[in-house]
Image (cartoon, rainbow, N blue to C red; front, side, top):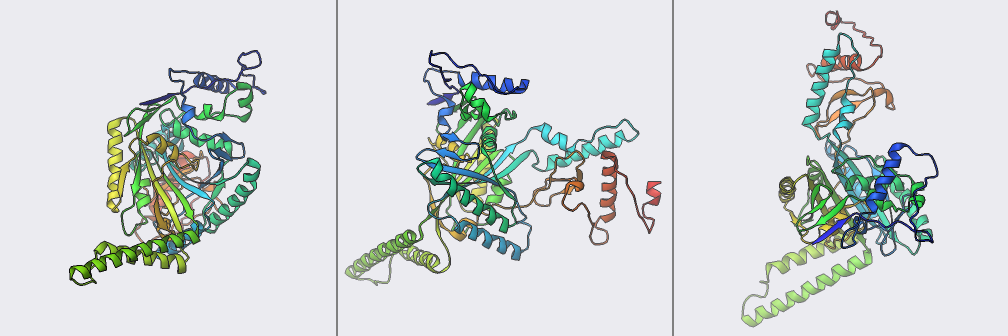
Length: 516
């Protein structure tokens, strides 16, 4: 049994006294409480003198977003948005897939990278503010209340209660920060350009943003805002881990863990299917529960990969010759060999041809799924649902027995893989886990209007057109498809929520009597 609780020793001065927190600038009451809570959190001790901070694997985080991991590994993180893939035509899908293959081929064997997909529950207040229509004390407040009830019902149909974010974390080995920084910046520029070619909006995260993501993962149960400033560290004697660490980790059993009040379990996907489907990753991300899906990908040097495949083919041929010798000695046809040898030999030769002539590379992939829940029973249901998705695509979801701590830390968007369960895949096989599904449009502006439901994700579409690059709009459709109703709904929504003027040009007098 391993039980971690939060504890951190404060720095002491020469007289052995603890240095009190003396912030350089005037802090708000909330910031003071945050610092005091972090110090109290760090000073908690237990009999084993272990701390939750000891489990968090990174060594140091810098303000520019560079993070140092053990063994001199330095990483940076890029957050990228979604684009429309699942609803695109086949030609567009093929173009996106080929572009994603070229994206993956950019990474050589010296760069390890991780794709992280976080579906974390948002507080009810977050979306309540987004769809709220303030009452104005006039004759239309009853309609506003009815309209807001309709929006709440539509919100419940989708999974808008989850905040979905996607990250790409890449890292290199270096002797020092000075040596790692210029190369990381060059790789970062190349990745952002590659995302731009795909039409994907992406941005690099600084140190505070990366810490905020870690805080959100470790505090799923509390959903408290992350308060932190870099100039708080020196006077308080704390490290960045003290501001992101949870109240405690509990790895009592080998099947699951407890993080604060949340229960969780990490599993890995055994890729057994001969052919993969581009819907597999999207189905995992469509689950209506908090989860983290991580893909750790390591490119294999092309020359080394070809030599390895050739060596395997030689071993298979040697086994085939031995079986033929046995057949001759036994007096039956030497062409009859075990089916496994024939199958593996054909697959190995096909793989060698792909590596040599089809612009394919070899990747080592670790596919992890972290499920969370409020209680063990609900956790079991979530894991069963994820297992059903894997089985649907002829794969298997296997629990990481007695490796839950390593699995949890490998699921963080830090670029560190402590689970050495890898599967070799080619570029096209790796790219089949397309990280794009459909582009969401959910703005949190005060005057965001309701425009319907996303056909794929069933999420609300809330837009403040005045904030878009082009605020103009046209409503197109076949006769009877609801163009007039859509226009009337937008007019009513604008009238109830905003103070904008509504001017109706109606040559055919379709809405004259309704307005009157």
